[in-house]
Length: 81
Image (cartoon, rainbow, N blue to C red):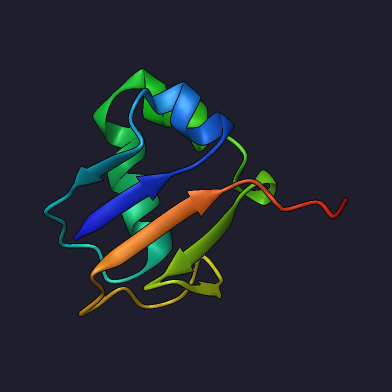
């Protein structure tokens, strides 16, 4: 699946997007797999309460299923303006 990173998440990880092979069944399991990779992922996902997630472009929660998903995106909360 494709994993996309936006704003400061992208800055901490150093990539806008990557292809990930995962055994994760939920967003949170994916986050745990990513955090175990390297320190930069650990830093990006240190406080998931400061993040939002979308699965196949639908805003969802970290306990959402990713089985069959093509894309997961992580980004900080949006602000209006």
